[in-house]
Amino acid sequence: MKKYISYFRMWLVMGLQYRAAAFGGVVTQFFWGFMEIAAMHAFHESNPDAYPMTMEATCSYIWFQQAFIAMLSARVFDGQILDSVRSGNIAYELCRPVRIYDLWFSRSTASRLSGAGLRCIPILLVAVLLPKSYRLSAPASAASFALFVLTLALAVLVSVAYIMLIYISGLYTISSDGLRRLCSSLMDFLTGGYIPLPFFPAGIRQVLELLPFASMQNVPLRIYSGDLAGPAMYRAICLQVFWLVTLVAIGRALCRGAERKVIIQGN
Amino acid sequence: MNHEKRYEHNNKRTGALRLYRRYLSILFRSKMQYKKSFFMLFVGSFLASFTIFLSVYFMFQRFPQVKGYTFQEVLLCYSIVLMSFSLAEIWARGLEAFPGMVRRGEFDRLMLRPRSLLLQILGTQCDIERFSRVLQALVILLYAVATSELRWTPLRIATVFFMLAGGCALFSGIFLVQAAMSFFFLEGLEFTNIFTFGLNEHGKYPVDIYGKGVLWVLTFIIPFALVQYYPLLYVLGRREEIRYAFLPFAAVLFLIPCYLLWRCGVRRYKSSGS
Image 1 (spheres, each protein chain N blue to C red):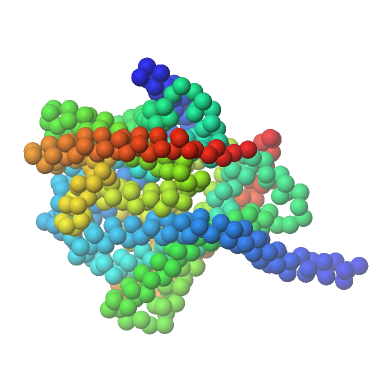
Image 2: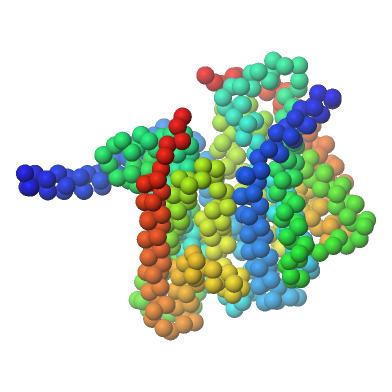
């Protein structure tokens, strides 16, 4: 365990070095958030009764989504992990007395946290200071803020556990590129990356809420504003834990299988 | 002597088209070597825009209209923007990848050849797998045209084509600016994606729904509204003035400063080495 924690710390510090790149990200995410909220306002104005959330909840949902995109998005991949499979450098890692799954897990968690850590503060700071109709408002209560932090951590772990499956698929097929491109936008959509899950039609929404994708963004971002509360919230948290355990178990099993017969590509 | 020179000049001109065709045929054949990967990318890029379509569809299941625009009207707008963006992305993909070329020092090699630089850059890449998006946009456009209750006059039909051509030119111009920026800043400028992917994705709705400020910026700074919002008003019959139909031509003027910036960049280019 200790070695994975020190790996984690090493990559976290490494990730925090890329400040210039993060600045570009901040501007992009900020623009994105602004445009999305503007569009949501237009829908809200056209028919406030059909709007399934409050406007404040939508704003905080979108701002947190943009601020933490590097951490929660189902389409952010660690380029070095993908490269190590493609180039054959994974051979070095296989020689070391570490488990590949745990190594990659700590690595992608670290790179996601550092990516989000650099981007989130400026975005959230500006979002708090915006005019009222665009502002990131205070959490619904102290309890919901505490639960927000807890479920956010779970959400990151579920996202990583899911992304791990895609990395591992690279060990089975030579190039995971196609699969990655095929999945990433669909995943993004199902996590609520384009429109929050409450905007989906009822039947589809009920199914989606059971899938792991709902555990990645939907749960923490809605708990913050109190949009998700009561029994539904507890059920969602249990599902998060369930998916985390399941996805890690599947990933571990697949990884063990792959390690046994891995073919090193490379030159 | 004079005659010879003119002959040479002519030859170079016709040669440009032939060379471009040759580049394309090489690219096409090399892609066909990896059919499975081509197919995956084809489907992948289809899904990428199809999910955006689905999110629009789901929103309109809930809301009958947004700022007075119906589902069909938004689809008309979305499909035109998607098609013009995808076409620009297919043929200007080389420009998008250009910053990498500068960083790796490959641009130096192009400068040594006695051919137009832009032609060579455009010839390095062509993302034909993204035609899946063009197809999708075409289907959506046809659906929107068939189901909207608009009266299609010849000028309205022509306006749709003007919007497509103007949009394609505008996005190509933005790609050219993006490429030119890499002469001035060696680090990747991620935020310029706002004007390419951002405009494509948020351009699914007529831009006036984002408010007056956004409309102003997209009219006077980046003339996106000239190929999207204003001509759309004419197509939808909200404006009768004929000049609205011809505004996409004004957007083409945007290419001039883009090209000048590019020229300026090429002139002050110093190899980054390696």
